[in-house]
Image 1: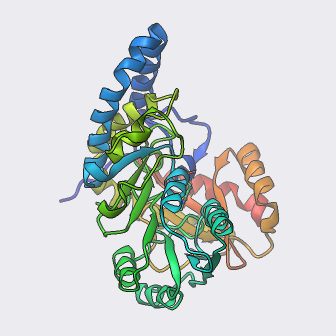
Image 2: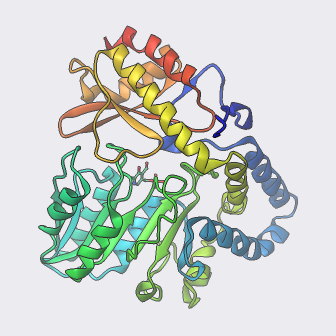
Image 3: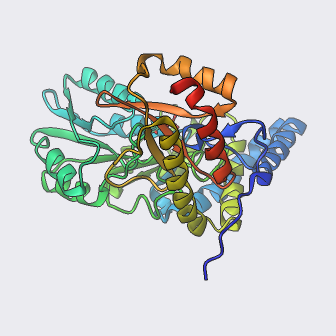
Length: 378
Ligand SMILES: Cc1ncc(COP(=O)(O)O)c(C=O)c1O
């Protein structure tokens, strides 16, 4: 018999008067990790010289634990501050010939599209955006992307998209890209904690955030680099480890920087373990199915069909009366007046509320949102 795990808001320090339904954007750090990080910073302030002398060794320990969490080869795993930095470092490494194409899909994260545009400009290459329908199945996704690979310098693809919260078939995409000789950069920003062994599909570069679903301190992310690119891949900041031949060590020391989050991050992995994360994740998925249905019913809309949805995020359709160009103002209004944190996304002319669930959420959160939202979104 499977036990239903109880919500554990007590492990976080989130304001209990607010409905926290958007873990997917910036995560939330458990109390215990915050305490470890505060102790590390206190140590740094007690003797900065001693602290900085100790950092390299502590980072090495932390890095090994984070790589093991992903089941990644530690020799190809580097710490980066966020997925944006991981994608940027990957695009800075790959050869992009003039006249070639950087291929993405219309699900790509906006800032990642900007990165592709910057590198395309620098190399006189072109950005090609492949339209993938929201409901597309894996086979359709692979064949749509395959049709854009001729002459491509690289495919940059989400493992779990932000605006549409869907899982992409990375193993098949890597296989088809490599058959065309096209390298693949996987934007796995949401993958750690949601997909087991997320970097195991043979992509040339994979990056993902520990500060989302594994609830690590912010600015903790990983870059996994395939063996053939490890020598060429450089950190974005040129510092003293510039000439270190080992990829992870080259990325460890980024000048004078706050290393406490990277050192404290494994504490969050231990919190997840105690929360029985894999079992909890599937229970959260069920909770969110129910919660999203409640919210959709209250708004008179539906839960979007998105092919394969991410375990802990769902899209609820916004009423057609909602003007998405005012999304920022609407989110601020919902936050201030309804005491609810949600995010709004747009895709292909349609607007959605993207709801998240983490260990601190319960069905009551979605019930309360269903009661409050129609007052502004009816
Ligand atoms: C799919 C995707 N890619 C990239 C990012 C950027 O992550 P970061 O802000 O940590 O660089 C996000 C952030 O939400 C994301 O959802």
